Image (cartoon, rainbow, N blue to C red; front, side, top):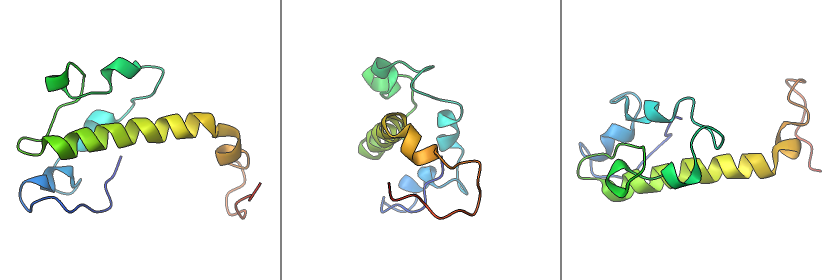
Length: 94
């Protein structure tokens, strides 16, 4: 996972920035199959993901967004990946 931008307090939310921290590495290899839905929470909420000190809301938001993105991809797998073997093709509008 790579955050492309954020509007968190400079110095505080910078942890989400891959160039400044490895915080986002905890999502590497995670999936809906290997991480049960109940675990997609911060450790302080009895989940498995570390939070950014002083930026709990941002941490919760990122964990939730990653989980929701994986759910979306699972539901729309065929449409998203139907031409994945043909790099350079135009997207199929379905």
